[in-house]
Image (cartoon, rainbow, N blue to C red; front, side, top):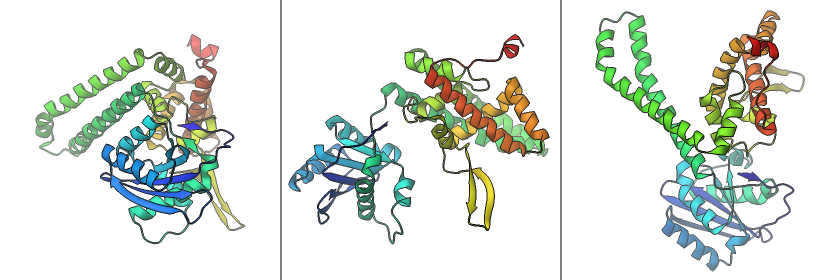
Length: 343
């Protein structure tokens, strides 16, 4: 998505869309006429889009002068986003929690009410809009490959974990179970390797992907898996303007919990984050404190001062996020210290 800087455009209408698997619920509001309020439910299909256009025209709504706003609901949004993009209509794909938290106390829930809530949100907050722009086809392909890989790994580990526990506890049939699952596990490993080869091929055949991959993996401790996830979830780093935004998105920035004179909670990271990137940065941090002399010295020093090891490791994760953002913005690989180069 692209942030609209110094937003001066004012749309005449705001269309809130509640997207489900089978239907779209749309509510249209006017910027100036507070009594203007119309709703329609259509199929989640190209035929439904034709109904939407006819309905808007019948209500005197100029679609080109409207801002369409919807929650990000993954694959269910695909058809509508494709239609809106094909016509070049302004679209705002917003985080569902942000819309909900800004809407006050709600009683009851229907798709019609949700579409009204979304339309109201767009009308109140349009000066903060992030207009949706379709991602590159190659990026979508790499995202699909990455998610398929993560799904296979999750299922493989789901089979291996209880088997390992049985072996550790000396369960008599553990060896037989392992033998019976041998071909299944081998199949998982083979398919995961094929997907990783496909991802490597996508990176190698796209100049921008290759540049980003090489820059990110120049940071000590950061590997291809983290680099791919960073490229995918940041929309090739187009969604963030500074390193702290990226760190917050990755869930590695600690926030205080204080209020008045009585509430003095422990400073901790927020649970509202991209958990995949948070996990990958954690694994990268474990590698970095072993292989990067500067971060290793920092980690050992803070532990010696009595700091909680997990808090120190989170600080390392934050440093890695900042380093990744810096090398991408500067388009220069991470500069290792001379004594590290000689090691």
